Image 1: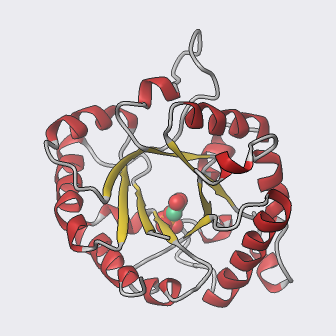
Image 2 (image 1 turned 60 degrees about the horizontal axis):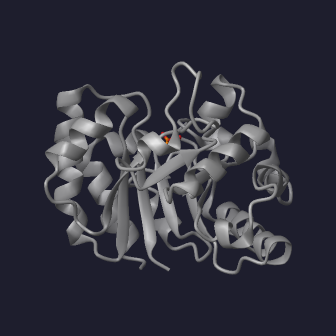
Image 3 (image 1 turned 90 degrees about the horizontal axis):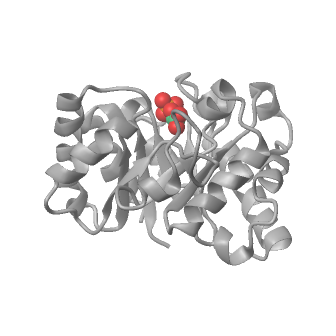
Length: 250
Ligand code: PGA
């Protein structure tokens, strides 16, 4: 399975900064052929960035940070999967900041996944447990959240998605989950997909305070196929270093 590193830019960067960073990533991406590398600019920068890139390396993609749960119509402020389809190839779904600030329900996330699949955009379904105290216990009940998000999504559709395990307590805190913890949760999630959904090789990313200091350890984890990187993806050199170190484990 090809490994994936996605930079989650969140609500950062003006247009000039976005151009500089996108260009840097576009240029270094071909050096890491074993990886597929993506960036997620804000909606408003997606089209100008896409238009400025005459050549897109095969292992580089633009992604959106969210999508509407609805197909079209009177939904002020929303952007539909149909509108995104010629602009991005991947889209985050259910990032914890979206779930939290927009009070998204499992039904919303489920509808977003289906909208994206209908237009052949790859959903990157984000999920993870709230509380750090669970780090000391056996395994978090992350699969309950997944089961709700994936209600009635067919196995062949699940195979088209990526999944980003992001423990909420690790996002933006400088306190990533330990490799041992990520490995065991990863195993738990992959077993769940096999046994409950009949999906054998689901692509599982880890996100939460990934930096160039901890990426080597995370890259060595067998159950992890990729990374979702927030803060550290806003700096071209650090993001490239993360890609370089992660690709050493391909
Ligand atoms: P972080 O963010 O790397 O800054 O912790 C990750 C994310 O929110 O996807």
